[in-house]
Amino acid sequence: ANAPRVIFSGIQPTGIPHLGNYLGALSNWVQLQNTAGPSDELLFSIVGWHALTLPQHPQQLSEARMDMLAVLLAIGIDPRRSIIFHQDDNPDHTELAWIFNCITPMGKLRRMTTWKSRLAASKNQGDDVDVDEAGLNVGLFAYPVLQAADILAYKATHVPVGDDQTQHLELCRVIADQFNRNFKAEQSLFPLPTQLNTPSKRILSLRDPTSKMSKSSPDSSSRILLTDSPSQISQKIRSAVTDSIPGINYDPVNRPGTANLLTILAACNNNEDVGETARRYGGKNHGALKKDLTEAVEEMLKGPRAEYEKLRMERAYLAQLAREGAEKARLKSEVTMREVRKRVGL
Ligand code: ADP
Ligand code: NA
Image 1 (cartoon, rainbow, N blue to C red):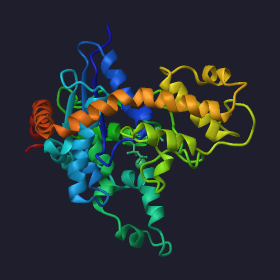
Image 2: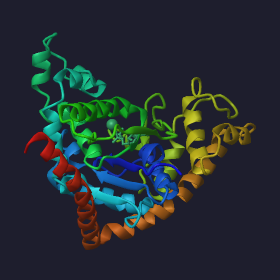
Image 3: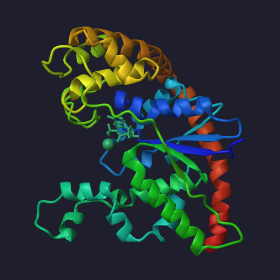
Image 4: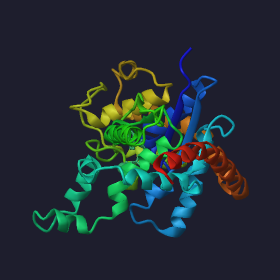
């Protein structure tokens, strides 16, 4: 039998997830949960403290926390099987992050590509790094340290995340290893967690298929949200940018828009091989593809959407689940934190 795993992943409460979030990340959580062994433990966290690294409207953030909890339940994360909780309900994360801050070299954080791209975006005053950094907050800089604390507070061994998180997970292992060396005892305290590479499908913007589907695009017709109505789904797919080449084939380089629609359709069809999907449309046109895609997306989303709409009204129930999730999470992280404090001398 395989060694028991502790699986941890997180998502920010920054809006209703789109199809990219769902097919690239969240549906994989459900899959992992439903195929996990009996001794595997799963934790899924809504990471509000991470969201605060960018400006948030307080009222919106507090609703978005509930939205995300309802979404996770609606897509099939089962609170009897997985611990679902708000990161910001468990202060062990921030305590551990602080201790990690004190053993993490600045230089390592400066090399994170996420930080470098923030810095590049703020660069408008010459080559002076100090000036460029001045407008960015410390939270954004230390984001990967908090992420390491999220994971290691539960001694997670497996972390399902996309490629964009590989560097952060490497840093998490560096921090775990540094702690283990600095505060040596008979046994290392932290495992070095493994990235569980999701068979991750990169979903592209419906309006600009050279970029990924993203919540930050100002064009809301570029993304399908999990809660979109049938008419919204239909309208967005109808206006999806493709090409004027007759017929359908899967060619992501020359026909990214068409390939993207095929990728989504294949995912809707129980993750069938996209080549298989493409072959069925060989003699057809974009109209036929879009029509079938609209039906397939609606078929995939209607159950979760109905469940979401029902759950979202039940604020007391959601609050109760959040409390229970946080309690379960805290019971686990407390065990880690007792050992952490002892080792560092607090
Ligand atoms: P966004 O890019 O819309 O801001 P996030 O960065 O919050 O989304 O990502 C949340 C999760 O969804 C991450 O695991 C990320 O890898 C995944 N994800 C985001 N956009 C896509 C996409 N277009 N295709 C596949 N996965 C995606
Ligand atoms: Na993003």
